[in-house]
Image (cartoon, rainbow, N blue to C red; front, side):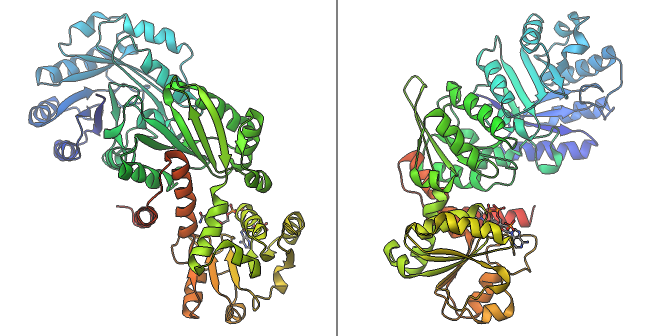
Length: 522
Ligand SMILES: NC(=O)c1ccc[n+]([C@@H]2O[C@H](COP(=O)([O-])OP(=O)(O)OC[C@H]3O[C@@H](n4cnc5c(N)ncnc54)[C@H](OP(=O)(O)O)[C@@H]3O)[C@@H](O)[C@H]2O)c1
């Protein structure tokens, strides 16, 4: 089983003792004591002796991500002292022993032989593994800066083809899944920090994220993988929602963030390699900005089944990957769960069915991606839609594209917007979104004329109650925030992947909790 290792930079004996205790309390299997900036070997010996969990000791040289300028033989002597004090493992860089490998056998404890590249993939990666394996150590550790998310696949291949226990990590945000999925691929260990500030390498998750958010303890080689593809993705709430839902259902899946640089070519290169890499068992993707159009284009290129409405909108936010028992791809399917999420949010709030939307007059603020989906969705139900957008031409183009499908769609100039006849008001602009929470897309006069509006729907979910929603409530109008749309689109994805209904209330809770944590980081 892959060990969970918390790296601890030793600054003082007291601080390190506290951190070791915290790591043990959080469920770490071992700690890595980084002693490169701490020269008191007696204190190191006391820390090792008092630790309740196994200790790996590392004295990293400068130039390989460390801070120690001692010559190799003196650094190795420090490790020897740590072994005499009871260290379970020591880490030695390949570069430190390549000319005197006998040092390794003289250490007296199992050795993790390591090589790091902070620029990118080492040029002769597989030869490096051979070179390491020829030396008397117990574990090979390779870490390099991910050039793109695709580098993770090579790290997984290194683990699958390991000649002896191994660690293969890609640094940086794009490389994060090499850490999150290390257990699935049988790594010797993965690193996790105590908190966001104590991470010793870019992309390193916290132990709490790994265990609670990324289902560490449930990961097995067969575990199905899902992910959100976008740029940026670091603050996406989707991993929290889906992993919690997998947990709740007892479903053997894990959901991770996948940072893919903008542009069709990067999406295509990512999708081809990840979908074809059978051991990953990738079963589904959520697609977010800026890749929804790219996902549609790629599915069309691959001959995947694309829902006609997604084709009409020109965007796919969900991909379902069906595989045969041998892991080969049987089929690919894409659709937009935003479409149903928008309609369901409205009909659930008003307690009506979709056919009743035919008699509604909807005013839509914004003509971007969400505005487009809302226009297509409402027009398809026969609603009468008026679009107002900062850039009038964009609203006009959208209106002419969806007018008569079958709803009546037109554009108005923002300055001439009259909301007094609206049954439905939907904001799809980011006005009022965190951190500009004081902003509202309508002025006092417009708000006052909203009296006959049956529903004010703000698609923004951060904050949960925008200024627009607050104003609507004050006027006694029914209102909903973007969280309702967000959880419904996630629920539709979950059902498409698992074949089971999602617990909407639970998903809503997860979003609320995650948002309050993001606003009040501990
Ligand atoms: N609840 C959910 O699940 C969910 C999902 C996706 C998005 N959303 C929300 O929808 C919003 C828009 O997302 P999107 O993907 O549609 O973005 P988008 O494609 O970039 O479109 C943004 C739209 O808002 C307009 N706009 C932007 N800044 C403005 C400003 N300062 N004043 C007036 N108009 C402005 C833009 O007008 P121009 O055409 O003039 O640029 C454009 O029409 C986001 O803020 C997000 O909160 C919610």
